[in-house]
Amino acid sequence: MNAPTRRLPLPEFTALIAMMFATVAFSIDAMLPALPTIAAALSPEDANRAQLVVISFVMGMGLGTFAVGPLSDRFGRRPVILWGALLYCIACAMAAFAPSLDLLLAARLLQGIGASAPRIVSLAMVRDQYKGREMARIVSFAMMIFSLVPAVAPLLGSFIIAAAGWRGIFVAFIAFSVCGMIWLALRQPETLPPAARRPLSPRSLARTLVEVFSIRTVAVATMVQTLCFACLYAMLASTQQIFDTTFGRADNFPLWFALIAVLAGSASMINAALVVRLGMRLMVRATLLMQILCSGSFALIVAFALPALPEVVYFGLFLGWTVTVFMMAGLTLGNLNAIALEPVGHVAGLAASGTGAIATVVAALVAMPVGLAFNGTPLPLAIGITCFTALGSLLMRLLPRG
Image (cartoon, rainbow, N blue to C red; front, side):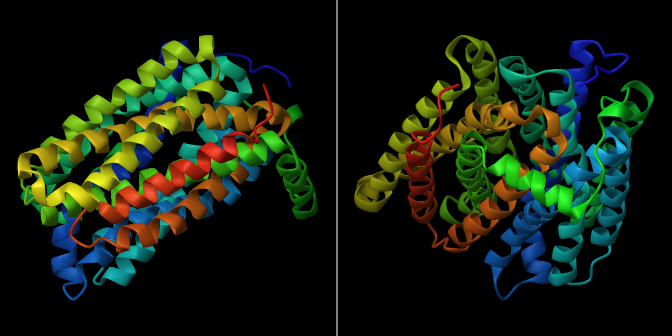
């Protein structure tokens, strides 16, 4: 593939990629403190349905991912990202005025479709210029920077709710997206030259997708990524409700979540430091095994030892376990992306689209019943994450050697 005429300096490029990733993190995490208010206003008869505000966004992001990769392979990376951001901003405006939960969920679905462009096409933009472990290292550094967003997003969301109500959060989403797109438009050159673009043909797309997923590395890495995303989405959907209902700590939730995010953010730094030396496959395998141990142990404690635990110990164990789940995301998702895309650099946009769409949509569908099974304790969540990581660990055995 022809190289682009000019590259941004690596630190600026990494920071820009991190900001495009952060569009998704901000859109999810800033909503978490608003879920009880949304439930009271739009779904008082079933508070658990408010979790769907998170899941519907994720679902939309997965559906949009099917389209944005092929479009970026045809028209270039920059135009698709910018048009996706415009759709995202329109959907945010719709959500700000939604009179019912169903309309809010529809707007969030559309918002996720728009957000899929910066999130997924940015990966193809990285793959246009870098590959293999170097690509994994850039993605890890980008995730390390963007991990600061979950640390401040719930706190920022709580301030916005206090000042302007939960609908004001969507105005902040628009402002964040506009800033990122101005930066992209002014500084980032197009990374896919016209000579390397592919025609937008349904038959050609179908043929290429069959080619991509016939590669065992791509198929297995995508399945494992799906299970890791399912762990992350189930935790995100449930964590505020657990803090509120189980522990009665809703008022301090943004501060606790910031602590969790800061501690978990070290995972991306650890991965960036180790992945070049140890390899992506070993990092993923070791992380999944550790998470099976952590989640399985916590599930057993909640199931059998809970009556004997002081509340402060119970809360401390939950807090520590939550950190390990978010750390798992930092130690696996970037590596699994790089593993999946490494053999298919000639169709990086479509490959990123196909793998990302399947992983996101299926993960959201799998995570939804785990979140809705909330019974006042973290036990359903702990059992679900244990099962997801155990299956992911078994699938990693099917991955060919690098």
